[in-house]
Image 1 (cartoon, rainbow, N blue to C red):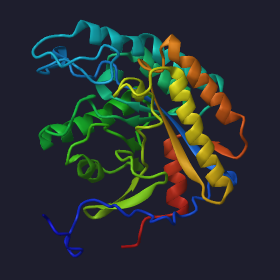
Image 2: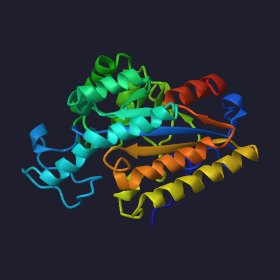
Image 3: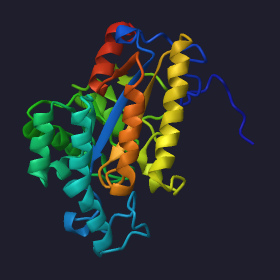
Length: 309
């Protein structure tokens, strides 16, 4: 049995705001900040065409195991729906409703679809980095990951026309946060799921703002574990989350809600109506700040700047 010595350094923070979170003072005294995120990944996933040793197997309707040294044509085709159809349907819905969204963009995926990149550039949406590849960076050599981070920034800047200020790998490794902080130029890092508010962490000699993302209010649950079977499941869960946070904001404890989307998942005809109903529900409420993640980060930095030391 391992005894805990409080004096020992421990690389996790299990305490956070300890039940006493700061007042975010959202613009307009909003009761909740809502961040809608569209993940653009199709074309950057595992594939032997990309030099990988196996096919993709995560977040696809096809399911199954990775195929070693072989293409999985069904998985490839499933991903292609996201870039060919789902992306465009979600963009249409967001633009029709005037929602300021954030797009997590995989560099290689953007490079393979210049029309999608042009659409994002024209939309005015925030485009954040989502890694040069949509792969697991847990065991990727540090030098390779550093080069991929630089490449992702270069690709987004070149294709979108503005330097990305947000970072989210999704499948990070032990070096990811440090490498992102060392590069600098980012308002926030979203590789965390541990709070309903932003917070600061020390990374080496600097403080990095962490803007937590979500795995629960995320359409990936329609595939990851299969606990959501229909769009209605996604809708109901996200509505419950929104209603609770809206209520807490009314009680004097405003928080933030993130909604995670993927073109190949919620963009399917049997699911996308749930996204429309969810956005309609949110927009029927007053005192909601629907904003991109860069705006949340900028606001937090102004109201709750990093510690002096």
